[in-house]
Length: 194
Image (cartoon, rainbow, N blue to C red):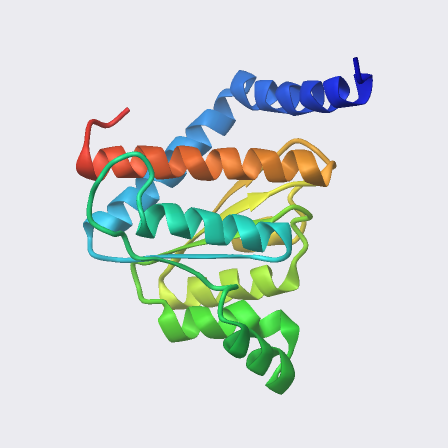
């Protein structure tokens, strides 16, 4: 039997168990779900951004809200800000890569919306700038972070910092949390609240 595979699964399991054992993590996830739920109830939208694997997670979460998660229901307005290559490259070229999300928050965001920024390092300058623009605009910013939280936590309204410095484990926890948020929000709007 391959012990490396067993070790990897055990590491992932231990991190999720650590989240389960600390009440503040559960409370923060619940609070984030409530913020997103209330935004949708008020006719607002969800913006999501990340880089690399976190960009894929942002896209994945947006897809769950726009498409569906578990329930057959109407589409919810969620936009992954890292998906339009023409917008990303024009902003990166004409301004700077650190402004790719900030400009889109300015373009697409409105007071009452919610922004989720995902960063395994917690130090993504383009996420920091997006959070700053969100604050100026009256948009609530939620951070899914790792590696101690970094700079990003100083600019987000609410942060959940995964207690790990291992990028793959942080990403696994982030997508699990994304799924939990989708589930709670979907059931809160269209079914029975869990």
